[in-house]
Image (tube, rainbow, N blue to C red; front, top):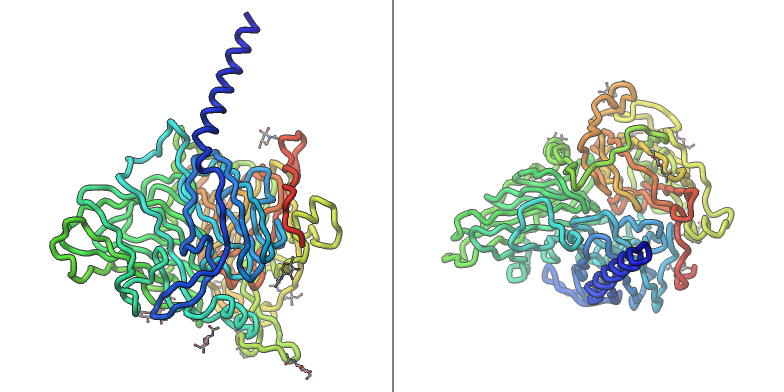
Amino acid sequence: MLLTKEISSSSILFFLVLSFSFHCLASTHYNFVVKDAPYKRLCHTKKILTVNGKFPGPTIRVHKGDTIFIKVHNKGKYNITLHWHGVKQPRYPWSDGPEYITQCPIKPGGIFKQKIIFSTEEGTLWWHAHSDWSRATVHGAIIVYPKFGTGSPFPKPNEERPIILGEWWKKDVMKVLQLFLRTGGDPNISDAFTINGQPGDLYQCSKSETFRLSVDQGKTYLLRFVNAAMNIPLFVSVANHMLTVVGIDGGYTKPLTSNYITISPGQTLDALLQANQNPNNLYYMAARAYSTGLNVPFDNTTTTAIVQYNGNSTPFSSPILPNLPYYNDTDAAFGFLGQLRSLASYEHPDNVPLEISSHIISTISVNTLPCVRNNSCEGPNGTRLAASMNNISFVRPSIDILEAYYRHINGVYQPNFPGFPPYIFNFTADYLPLILELLKRGTKVKVLKFNSTVEMVLQGTNVVAGIDHPMHLHGYSFFVVGYRYGNFDKDKDPLTYNLIDPPLRNTAMVPKNGWITIRFTANNPGVWFMHCHIERHQTWGMETVFIVSNGKCPEEHFLPPPPDMPPC
Ligand SMILES: *[C@@H]1O[C@H](CO)[C@@H](O)[C@H](O)[C@H]1NC(C)=O
Ligand SMILES: *[C@@H]1O[C@H](CO)[C@@H](O)[C@H](O)[C@H]1NC(C)=O
Ligand SMILES: *[C@@H]1O[C@H](CO)[C@@H](O)[C@H](O)[C@H]1NC(C)=O
Ligand SMILES: *[C@@H]1O[C@H](CO)[C@@H](O)[C@H](O)[C@H]1NC(C)=O
Ligand SMILES: *[C@@H]1O[C@H](CO)[C@@H](O)[C@H](O)[C@H]1NC(C)=O
Ligand SMILES: *[C@@H]1O[C@H](CO)[C@@H](O)[C@H](O)[C@H]1NC(C)=O
Ligand SMILES: *[C@@H]1O[C@H](CO)[C@@H](O)[C@H](O)[C@H]1NC(C)=O
Ligand SMILES: *[C@@H]1O[C@H](CO)[C@@H](O)[C@H](O)[C@H]1NC(C)=O
Ligand SMILES: *[C@@H]1O[C@H](CO)[C@@H](O)[C@H](O)[C@H]1NC(C)=O
Ligand SMILES: [Cu+2]
C-alpha cells in the first residue's frame, strides 16, 4: 500500500517536471552577440554597441520561476558585462553582472554563459550592460509572465508593448565618457531621448521613423515601460489618455490611474491604456526630463511616439501633445511615486519586515575633489566632481569582490562600510561649509547576517547641490516604507511608515534634499551591489556593496561558480 502510494506520487512529480521542461525548451537558451552596428538618428549615422545588432536589444520572455541560459559573446572592442536588472538570482550572484563586483569583465573575443534564475518576479524587468557607459545602447526588456495556469490580477489586456525609454548622444558614448572622466566636470548632455529607439518627430530627421502604437478603438493595451536613460528621471504622458498602473519593478501594484507617470533610470512600470478616444485624432506619447539640480545641465528636449487608431480617417493631422509636469516639479514627481502601493492581496501577499535586526542610515552626496597637479578640474570652483555614501566614495577593485569573498583573497575590500553618517549636520541646509564637500575613498562593504531584517534610511544631502537619486539594489526587492523632504527624524518619522502595503521596488528615488526608508530580509546570500542609477553619480562613486553571509543549512549557502567565469 505504502509502496504504491510512493510510486504514484513520484511518477506524478516526474510527469510534471517533464511537461514543464518540455514546454520551456524552446526559449531557455539565448545567444547574445555584443557587437557594433550602424544606426541613423538625428540626421547622422554612427556605430553603436548592440546585442545581436538590435537597438533596443532583444526582449526576453519567460514565465515566473523559469531558469534560462544566455551565452554572451563579446565581439565588440571593449570589456563588457551584462546585468539582469531586478532578477534576484537566488543564491547565484555569479551571473548578476556588475563589473568588478560579481565578475571580471568579458574581454573582447570572450564568451560567458550566464544562468538567469527567476523566482518571485512577475511583470516587466530589463537587462543592460553593467560596465563603463555601454548600457546607453546595450539594453532590452525582460517580460515575466505568470506561471502556467495562473493569471495577472488585472483585466486581461488585448495586447501588450514594451516601451523602452532611452537617451541618445550624437557622439560615440565612449567618447562622451572619456571626456567626462578627463574634465572632472559634468558629462555632456544627451542630444535626444528615445522611445523604443526612436527620438520622435519633434527632432530633425526622425519623422518617418517615429515609433507608432497602432490601436483598435475599445481595446486595452498593456504598456511595459522601462527607463533605460542614463542620467535623468523622466515624466511620461499620453495625450487625452489615462494610464492605469498595475505593476512596478516586476511586481503588482494596486491600480493607480494618472495622466502622467514618473519613472527613474532603473525603474520599470506596467500600465494599461484604454483606446477610448476619438479615433480620428493622433495622440503623442511624450517623455521629458525631471531635473532638480541647481546649475546641473540636462537634456531639455521631448521625445514622442504616436498613438494612432486603426481606421483613422485623417492620418496626416498633427498629433495632440500631452501636458507634462514642469522639469523641476518635485511635487509632481513624488505626487505620483508616493501614491504607488503594492497589491498585498491573498495571492500576492506582502512580507514587510516588522522587527528590524540591522539598522543602517546612509547619506548620499555629491562631492568635490580638490584639483591636484595638472588635472583638468572643470567641476565647481576648479574642483573635480565626485559622489559618496556615508562620505565614502566607492573605488572599484581590480579583482571582483565576489571572487575575493569566495576564495578568501585578502586586500580586495574592507568589511567596514559605516552604518551611520560619520558626521551629523543639517544635511539639507541651503548653505553648507565647503569642507563638507570633501570625502574619503575606499572599497568598503557592509556585511549582513543571513536572514537579518534590514532597514536602511537613505538621506539625500545638499552638499554641492541637492538632486534626486534613484538608488538600486541588486539581488533583492525592497519595500519603500516611508519618504519625506528634509532631514530624517528618527523619533517622529518611523511613526509615519506604511507597513501594510508599501511599494516593493528594486530602484527607488530619494527626493532632492529628502530621504526614503527601505526594508528587506537578507535571505539571498552573496555579494550584491547598491548604487545610484544615475550613471554619472555611479561613475563618481555613489555606491556600496552588501555581502550577505550564508545561513546554517546548505540550502542557505550560495552556489559555487560556473567553470567559465571570465578571468581577471
Ligand atoms: C561635448 O560638448 C561640447 C560642447 O557642446 C562639444 O564641442 C564636444 O564635441 C562634445 N564632445 C563629446 C565627446 O560629446
Ligand atoms: C526647458 O524647456 C522648457 C520649455 O520646453 C522651458 O520652459 C524651460 O525654461 C527650459 N529649462 C531649461 C533649464 O532650459
Ligand atoms: C523651477 O525652475 C524655475 C525656473 O525655471 C524656478 O523659478 C523655480 O523656482 C524652480 N522650482 C523649484 C521648486 O526649484
Ligand atoms: C603634468 O605636468 C608635468 C610636469 O609639469 C608634465 O611632465 C606632464 O606631461 C603633465 N601631464 C599632463 C597630462 O599634462
Ligand atoms: C565656490 O566658491 C565660492 C567662494 O569661495 C563659494 O561661495 C561657493 O559656495 C563655492 N561653490 C561650490 C559649489 O563649491
Ligand atoms: C536645515 O536647513 C533647512 C533649509 O535651509 C531649514 O529649513 C531647516 O530649518 C534647517 N534645520 C535645522 C534643524 O536647522
Ligand atoms: C568626509 O571626509 C573628509 C575627509 O576626512 C572630511 O574632510 C569631510 O568633512 C567629511 N565630510 C562629511 C560630510 O563627513
Ligand atoms: C528567518 O527569520 C525568521 C524571523 O524573522 C524566522 O521565522 C525564520 O525561521 C528564519 N529562517 C531561517 C532559515 O533562519
Ligand atoms: C579589461 O578587463 C581586464 C580583466 O579584468 C583588465 O585587465 C583590463 O585592464 C580591462 N581593459 C580595460 C580597457 O579596462
Ligand atoms: Cu544619484
